[in-house]
Image 1: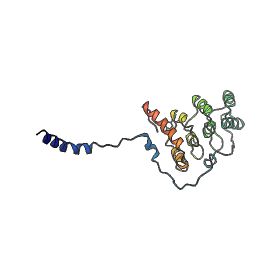
Image 2: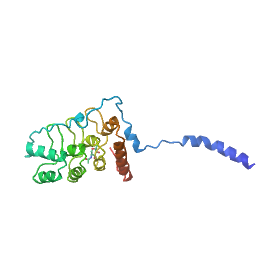
Image 3: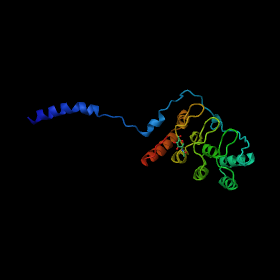
Image 4: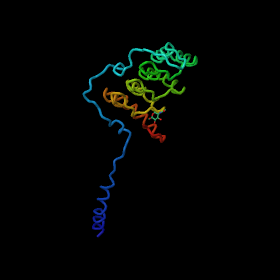
Length: 196
Ligand SMILES: *[C@@H]1O[C@H](CO)[C@@H](O)[C@H](O)[C@H]1NC(C)=O
């Protein structure tokens, strides 16, 4: 008798169980953007316009020499120079003729203390160069992406090749960078922050 009741109950429940299956979005969905699987491998940085430092005058009173010095200091991990140039009045968001900022240079080369200094002092984490690469696009050349993402850098910015920072990582097959991105995104989501 009891067995019959259990069987009827089970039958009436199972369609509901099937309907109740849902797909939960997790942070891995940020990796689902289009991937050019056959894209030819490019040299690091230079493939995204990071070679050669050429400089133009800006109207702010910041000289082309001081901008060049700032970008070079960021590129070669010279925090003391970055700080003294900043205190002499060079804008941290200064761009060279290719639109590159100190944050691009430090990010491309994985110089964390300079990246942190620049962010702490208000540098624009979403600055884009002439190819629309952001510092995060270049940070994806190494695994030093966390600071930028936690500081609000957008992970979905498209560069002029229609690639997001994540696309650049996936193209290069850098799983450690993908892990670092997911870690940073997960950390932000824990705090309820929306990741763009
Ligand atoms: C960067 O850009 C994204 C998308 O436009 C925006 O949501 C985010 O607030 C920006 N981050 C900062 C720190 O300005």
